[in-house]
View 1 (cartoon, rainbow, N blue to C red):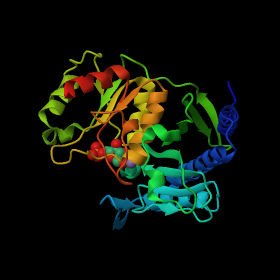
View 2: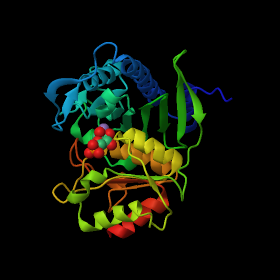
View 3: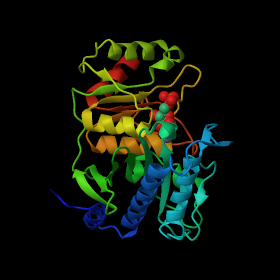
View 4: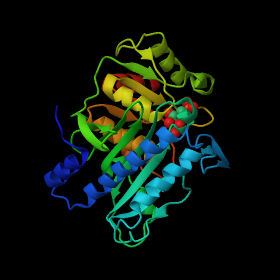
Length: 325
Ligand code: F6P
Ligand code: MN
């Protein structure tokens, strides 16, 4: 078995791109946060950290104890890391300027604990991250974050499932690493991931059907009745974007969160959910769209901007775009 570790891969990326060590330091810190969070999540049931805090976040979602812990862990691992100027997180209304990061070349966007609704049922959860280079210097500003996903320098996610996986790309191949918990090290287990074509699942919350426009309803019905040209798909829905996307990356098919008649922007957030996953998906040969344009082309108007999401195999997403047009 190949014994390449995640941090060795970071240094290979760095050597190949001729970059300074900053990017690999940032990625190493994300991997540290991932190991800390994997351990928190595993122990949450024993130590009374399941459940809600009683408050709601900027998205009007009920906040769980683990959401707060996850956000704190991300802030902690970047404290006094001079290469990162600021963080935009699902859990923070405003951007967070990293103390001591005024000279940093990069900014981080992060969904610290995606799918936290799965906490009490021992289901999959994840962390999604994107790293952008910024033009300005000094304290982090909104403009540093409002960049289209095609500017991403690196993006990826951590999946907390039966095992913890770290999947990312720094613009080259998409590689997946699995955590060996006993020694706290991620090893390369899924090199050069490619989204399969012509097979896999469709994944969507079909209980939203009555909220969709007719084209969307007809499109999802075609998947349900197994009448799509891209092939017959079976349904799967984990209810955690990272879990649903990870399956789509490995098995093929499509994950979607369409817009709704009264909420055309849908639910998922561009900066720290859709764009980093779209970056991974495209580098793995797949496709990601908001129904009209590539996710990676969408220019964010604000930190917590939402867009619809159709992501997965080219054949599936291409057919969806035809049906929606
Ligand atoms: O972060 C938003 C999120 O929790 C995703 O992880 C998940 O895919 C989605 O919401 C589930 O939404 P719904 O419950 O509406 O299907
Ligand atoms: Mn999320």
